[in-house]
Length: 343
Picture (cartoon, rainbow, N blue to C red):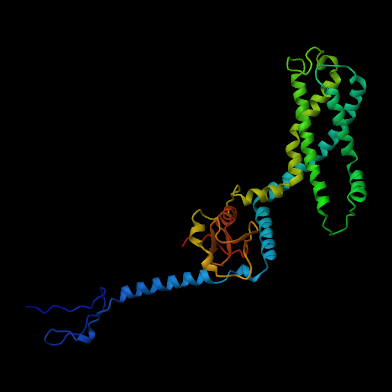
């Protein structure tokens, strides 16, 4: 019977065979009874688990800088990303908005003069809708708008008791007064909508007083200026809102809510491959509360939102906030580390 060649447990094809004696038996010292391949795999798994635990328990690099610095750094990165992706759009939008604002300012002054003339000429003619009252209110609004700068200086100094100084933050009462202008603009929008309604129902059975003659025939000049002014006010309202908030602010708002996408975005699976979810036990007891530098909100456990830590740079964010960021740019908001690695 031919001798059976001995083998080593766990040996692979191509490995050197153990030395065989003259009687066909192998030296026991050459027979390996340990599965080296399985041991190597287990060792790799242990190393990977140890590295994962080290990643989770290692303090975030964000803790090495102040929360204000981190938030400011993200705001600067947002500006850079938006300027790179939408710079041309922002520039043209600002030019267009500036042109519209200048034309709108000229048009409002022209409407104010025209309306005053028509109120003097036909304002005492009674008709089926109160366009005379509407015109009086709009004239008052127009006069206030024309004297707004002078009135603001008087109100700041004598009523709000505040004098603007370079670099000084206005007190809360001044901030509330400034926000009132936005409400005032919305009020003008409602007035224009009401004037449009008056024009539509004049001469119909839905007018305020159907027994009186139609304003279209009784006061045609006043009717026409009210009609054009009301339509102009309604149509121009979106431009007023955009000029108040600014195109950049609108883009910032859309970016933080995942409404923007660019060609520099990370692949959809990049977030899962380049981050790991963390819990309170993974972070221990930090000296100060963690903060998501994108939304500038504290991260407190238990947290309703999923919190993740980047594997490449150890920065911590809300998962939803980071996903919205990666829809626009593939790098870390804080350190520019590439978060789109798919290996």
